[in-house]
Length: 227
Ligand code: CTP
Ligand code: CA
Image (cartoon, rainbow, N blue to C red; front, top):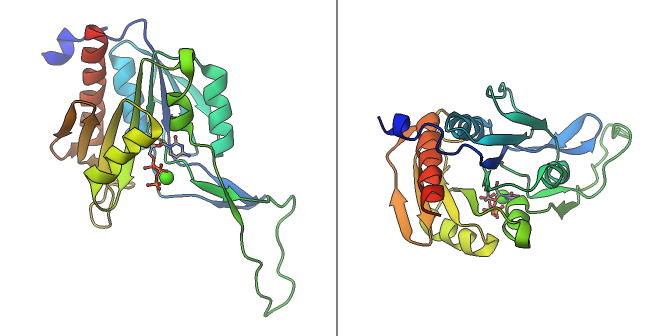
């Protein structure tokens, strides 16, 4: 019933969703990455499109099919993801679910890195920081989306760390989740989140990622209705 009431509630709104991991190449055949499946982000993109939003899904490499009715932009690295986001801006809202690699190898070898001998010691991999896409979107001045939502994956002190992240990055809402070993969140089908806004914290029940996505899309529609 609630969804029927909200039919078309985000019509005319353009929304960016970032999703998936990023891959940071070491050489043409190797990369650094993380365990993100992209499921939560793709579900958010689908839920926003269901409410009539014009969704741009900028995604790192995943095994998923882009949801119907969204503009899909594929990328690989964090730097590429930022470039794709900038090229598609501006947006009325942004939801950053991507598990962006925090660092990338300082040098990317043009050819496959070879062993030199049987007992050779590999050179250490030097890392440099990647751009923070959520922080950049949150600081965009007049082009800033009216509502910027981040996701925070934490393995301990979930609310404390996620609230600090909301402040540090300058986004409006943070969807915090516990990804510690045993929760099965990373790569799994369910999620247990806490929505953190300037008004306070709301713990949502353990539920499928699709339901988290629908509830978030619905909350965003309510926010725009009052905005
Ligand atoms: N994020 C981003 N670009 C980055 C890193 C993070 O856009 N380079 C976004 C994620 O999409 C997510 C939010 O920031 O919405 C929080 O990501 P997270 O990895 O939890 O935060 P970090 O600031 O990277 O902190 P840490 O990994 O140290 O916990
Ligand atoms: Ca991070």
